[in-house]
Amino acid sequence: MRYIDIPLVSYAVGLRPSRECSNPPPVAAGAIARCLEILNFGMAAERDMGARGVSAGRSKMARHPYPTIAHSMPGHAAPHVMLIEQRHRYILNELARTGALSVAQLVRALNVSRETVRRDLNALAARGLVIMTHGGALAAEPRESGAAARDAAHADAKRAIGRRAAEFVPDGASVLLDSESTVHAVAAALADRHRLVVYTNDWRIASILGRRNGNRVTLLGGELSADEDATFGIDTIQQLAQYHVDFAFVGAGGITQDGMLTDPSRLTAEVRSRMIAAAAAAVIVADLSKFGCVLPVRVSSENARYLVTERRPDNAFASALALRGIELVVCG
Image 1 (cartoon, rainbow, N blue to C red):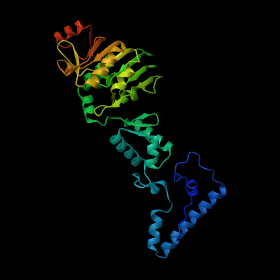
Image 2 (image 1 turned 90 degrees about the horizontal axis):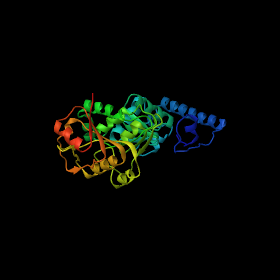
Image 3 (image 1 turned 180 degrees about the horizontal axis):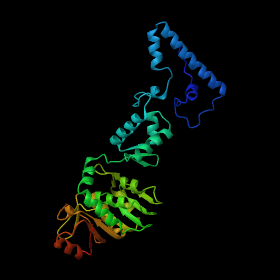
Image 4 (image 1 turned 60 degrees about the vertical axis):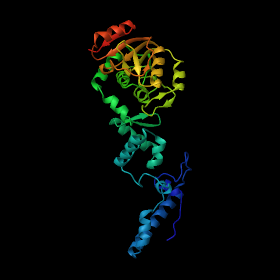
């Protein structure tokens, strides 16, 4: 039997065209009728071949009775027809691998409409499995295991610190937030504020506070770190020099006996130093595990005003912080 490729078939039966077309040509009623007539002829021919025992022809027709985009794209990852559960599993697997996906990518990969992709993403977001973004979605959990481990460590203390630190911030305030895990808890506690002006180098924090309650969120430029879901480097530092905000919330890698803030790398230390300098009130957030920890790089904290922690540290630490002009704020 001779096979005829008729582009109008995909429109007649509600499938996607064989290539992207933002404005597909209108299909006349006569053309649709002719396409359906051809489809019916093909199915009748297949039944006729089956009745005559022509197994080879039947097999070929059964596999690809109508060409679709899934068959026309070499190495296409998605199956010919995917159930909702299969699409959701595919999306979650790809997000776990890449961290982010666009609607356009999923339209091509799954061979469905943009509306179907958005419905799938909304359903997954409602279950807390993905984070919706403009034009796509992010993984709800960081793919980097080190970041996940930092978030999990001392989680209760970090949540308490985040809630207490967020009490400083009224609606309409401008804030800087760094990428430290305790600052993530601050961002979560700020989720009910309105009209915030937010600057952050962490895309997860940007996704928490962005596009809600009239907030305006700027994600700082720079080089995406291999260890954190955040940007660092000269571009980040230069951009920070342009801003002056009401509050900055920064973490600490370690706090020495004399109240000095320290960090493991120059990149994080420089970004935190610039954030502290750019704020009218800089707030350090750190759980007790950071006290007494000495790391290689010093953070400039002369402009820091508060340090929020879950329990009062030794008096020596409190005295050292007071000498530096930093007020100790204890949760509870």
